Image 1 (cartoon, rainbow, N blue to C red):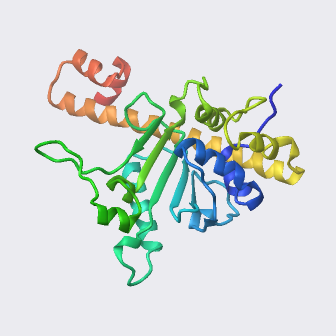
Image 2 (cartoon, rainbow, N blue to C red):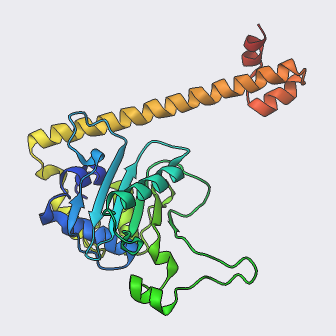
Image 3 (cartoon, rainbow, N blue to C red):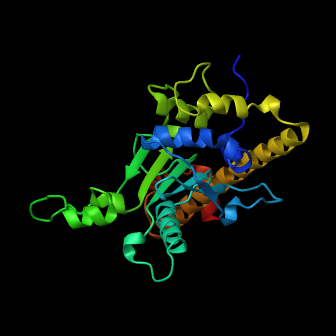
Length: 282
């Protein structure tokens, strides 16, 4: 019988900020980024502050690794149509926040943005997407490269390593079959379960530290309340979305009625019933 584990969003706010548990977060980052990550510090942001009201949809965590790169981890539950622009804004803001006055642009911090998304976002059947910046020739399609002096200045070999990287993890697209160590982490993020002998870095420690039964009574009450709030907010969002969709279809139907479009075509276009159309006409 698998143990009940604390959800990652709660853990990352309450437990993984402790240096004693950095190993868990470092393990997740290693499996995703495929490089050893040593967390130096967890940087403060508004959403990292302890809140009396735990009814939050979004969680931001800024981590600084041993290379001095800033990693932004965000857990998002509510759907946002402009989410891509928001992560662009967030990464740009981090760059300016950590740029000292009068510093040369060569000192601009590298940002890695990781979004763990629990809602349907965009079209695409994969569950992990990576976005980078490359400059491609319009005529010969060749990729712009750094010259030797630039490589020495930045201590990197590719242009794309200068710019923010974006990882979008679409949790709902994961099919619950772990084919590799990264999948073991994705399975935990989705189902809050860890196999008996996990191979992924950080998961063994996570299984020990994120055990629900090890929580104090006070912690369990707070955690259960948070989970209830989260499910309630998700239900409210879905209800609002459905209502909005119905209202939009009614508006379309009214416009079609005014244009004297045949009723059968209106029904096919909007999905409304005869009764719903009759009510609109009265």
